[in-house]
Image (cartoon, rainbow, N blue to C red; front, side):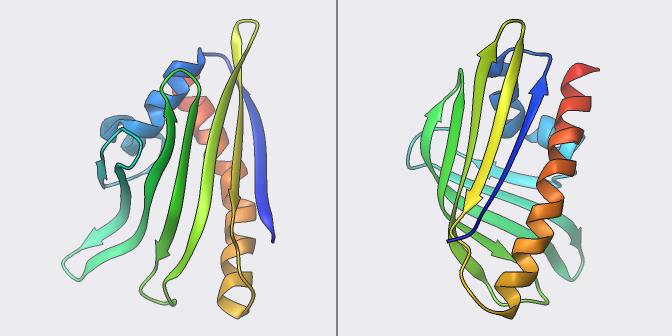
Length: 144
């Protein structure tokens, strides 16, 4: 199966990177997440929403926390993407691995589980472009 992987160096310790993936205010600041429901433990829910209006949610990503090591790793399984203009896409996996290197963190983001078909191809191409941009936003936010 296809996967998207991006790696970036961030000048903060790994626990701070993982915290930015779990904290509502931090998620809003660097990723534009409008609402979230995160239960930070293995088996906990992980739900992020964007573009909320009177008509509902524009985009939703939801999954289950498979692995959480607050000092270095967050992995989600059963990841589902909801977009009102597409079929529900999932399940997938998404993992953030924050490894300490000297006085910085090497963050590797891997998302996999993409299936075949027109909508999956669209989503894969969108994520292929989006993760490097999101990683840059995370870096800029944490290093300010």
